[in-house]
Amino acid sequence: MSPYDPSAFPPFAVTVDLVVLTVRRHALCALVVRRGESPFQGRWALPGGFVRGDEDLETAAARELSEETGLGAHDPLSPMPGNTAHLEQLGTYGDPGRDPRMRVVSVAHLALSPDLPAPRAGGDANSARWAPVEVLLNKDGGFAREEEQPTQLAFDHARILADGVERARSKIEYSSLATAFCPPEFTVGELRRVYEAVWGVALDPRNFHRKVTGTPGFLVPSGGTTTRQGGRPAQLFRAGGANVLNPPMLRPEV
Image 1: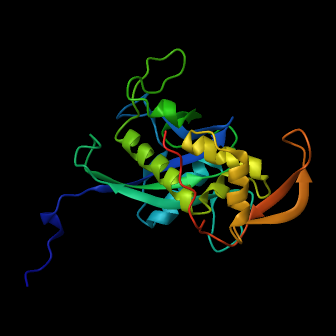
Image 2: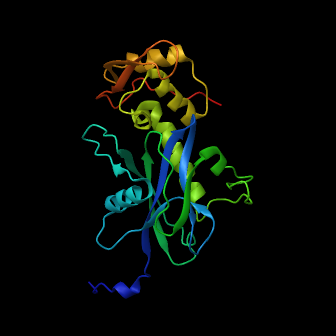
Image 3: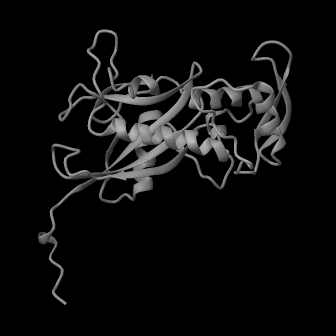
């Protein structure tokens, strides 16, 4: 067997990109940053960065999440504390021309958290903001502030964002992922509005209530009530130990 020659293979870099989703003002929103450096200087992009030499992929993704949002990555084996987000690997993107600087392979991650505050820019980004995913994925116009000409996201980030949104939309059909958008204690109505925001549809309140409360272990009463929705006090729940909604709650066809 001939000896391994590293110089026979072209060098390439590895990055992590984050699809950070939250529900703000009853709309599914993603975190975007304005690039402060070339390539695509001034264009909006997903947050992310290069994987450092001493990092594995999960560590790099958690670091970028902390730098961009101040949140830690949630340990799935422990209850969801207040200052963490659900973080999972989404996919790998390695088109040879996706980055004009050099060959770059990106391992994208999906992060979900309840209503998050205004983001802070870090790294090579000179501004950051939340934007509705339907605007970011608008192929006819793209995303821009009022004084800007709409443009598509930098790199292949529109594709990555679309994949992240579809992952979230499909997983809440059969898993407890939707509760990651909720605070530790929430009402059934608040959970329903998460489904409506992620799917972009209106759901029947009675059918929804019967479905999510009828699956053993999916929701657990916390023992309290709230009037933050207005009207009569509503019962508060927390996510139970059941991670699978069976039978699944299929999203309506739009």
